[in-house]
Length: 316
Image (cartoon, rainbow, N blue to C red):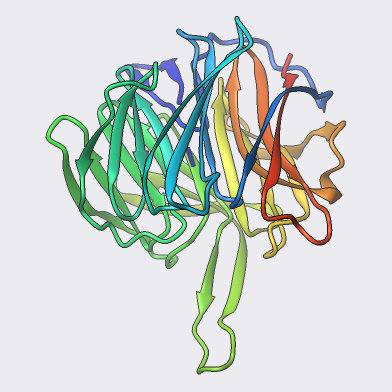
């Protein structure tokens, strides 16, 4: 993560894991989900984005042993699905929507295509060295905020990288998503690893951090924390709050759905109709005052092809 057109002092475009919404009253603490659609994947890594103009959400995923990128578009008005498949060896991608184009980012390259999943073009073959990356966007810039100890920037106008926009004083974090609000990037949880001598496995560390990067002053801070360690997070900006979902455990289980209030700097969890102990959440976006979640039921053993269920619930 993974947006939203929000009127602040200037017009800022956010997408991927977020969406376009007019401000609404947020008064729900309980989420009752209904199923929208489902599809099959062969890896747990996917990402979501949405766009209010076409009233659709998008998901990038792998469904054929990692040899192709699969992108689906689901139109909520017509309940119809369209798909894009193209050769690709990256099983972990993030998508951002900027100026009516979708940007699909991996550690190997960046693809661009339009909102109808047409006009596919590879715009960058530069290796960005990011592990299990997460992204957000600001105006015409893609920002890589997870998968390293620094924030990287890709300018979609010049199609050029800046690999060291800012270095984090807290070390690198994998699988840590975040959102931009008032020129601050808010990032939640994440993990890193401590290398061990072979044949010992690396030690994985998860964090309860809420990390804030001020883009105006180049200042980093951690003034608040989550009530638990989060191995992987998925986020979506919604009015004056950030929807924070993900999984606490290092085996990508023990899911949660919460909300970080940007006006009060406070975090709370939703009550939900989902059985959070028996699913793994794989992505989130917000569209039309509804939270849209992608998840997989946990079964033993997990099959080679897993069914992703996409569900939605009202936030008002």
